[in-house]
Image 1: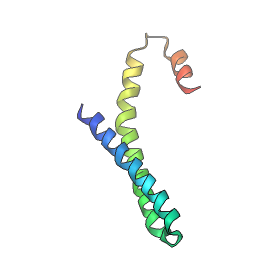
Image 2: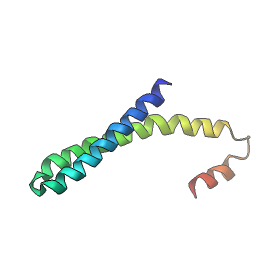
Image 3: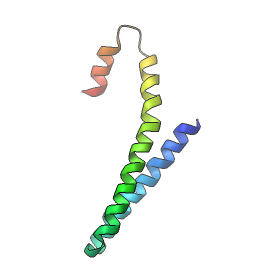
Length: 79
């Protein structure tokens, strides 16, 4: 729904901001302050997008696993 769309938009903007911060710093090495601030903003957006998207996805994953079998499937998810 709306939360997933907002998370996707946050990821899209974070990706663009990260790419631009790295590219702009390579083009102008004296530009580290602006690139650093942009990278911080991008990291906030990565965290926001991850929190919005990963929370509901983890809940759906947990609800789709039969009772008593979650530990096995969470092991598969994390390994």
